[in-house]
Amino acid sequence: MMNGFPYEVMLDKQDALERLDLRVYWGNYEIRVLRCHLTSFPPGKVVSFHKHAEFEFHFIPRGKGMVILIDEPYHLREGMFYLTGPNVVHYQEADPVESMEELCLHIDIIDLGATEEEQEGHRPYADPWEIAEAQDCIEKLKSLPLKPTMDVHRAMPCFLEAYQASQQKYIGLYTTIKQTIVQILLRAVRSYESNPMETDLPSRDMKAYRYQLALEYIHANSSSEVVLDDVADKLRISSRQLQRILKEQGEGRSFSEILEDVRLEAVCRRLVETKWPIDKIAIQEGFSNGSYLHTVFRKRYGFTPSEYRRTNVKS
Image 1 (tube, rainbow, N blue to C red):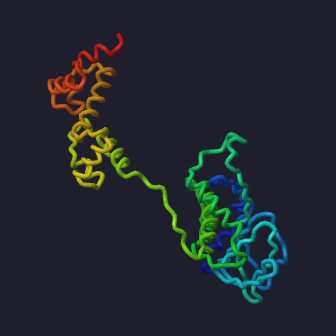
Image 2 (cartoon, rainbow, N blue to C red; image 1 turned 30 degrees about the vertical axis):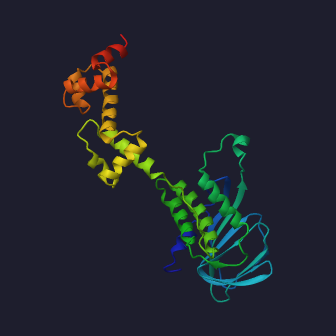
Image 3 (tube, rainbow, N blue to C red; image 1 turned 60 degrees about the vertical axis):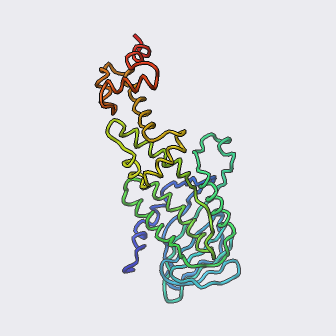
């Protein structure tokens, strides 16, 4: 019994994850999970020189031992991991007096390429940022040093998260499992990075973004009393800053002009889609009364609400 060992539960059903046909589409790659389990090496256990046709991640959550990668021996201890790529010959051995547990992930990585959509016609949309990150990660995996390092970015808990998802059957379990596979790859690569890379993230045009949010708020609240300060408060900016944004992004229109435009658009829809009287439409769409709506409408369009209705409603 391995008291206090969080991964022990994975020994109950060692093939739980391997029963799943896991194919993770990430960027321009398909990642096929061949094996994913926890195994235990009793003291002195030896796995003689061998190789695989796929990538294999070896994580040591407990115990110690050694590995020989091609012809270079390395000591292993709790918290370390190493990667063996396709056809890399390696030898494993547990400590003579202490067992060694190993979390193993075997994957095939298939490069679908930029023309995969043309080839099969079924490729889902992939975010260009995701494509770039996936390519960067896979390229680095192929050139990682053949030596163990510490799991400083905690890829190991991803194994347990995937196993628990498979057993607890909660909502989104399949998505959770697939995401853990990607995280294992990413965190493994990061653990070999000596210096964090500087990279940009996708960023917004904040003026356009705030203008769009302001429009959404105005549209949602145009039938009630809404003032510039309300909208600015929701966007967490000053009223003066919002007014500048509206002028720049809204073709020179002020807040009151934009609000009036939104209300008049709603009035036009009501006139066509309902048989409501003008007074009711005016109140419903934020105007004080029918007379005021009549004045504003005629000034904007050159004809009255009633004339608009007669012209646009089919008999």
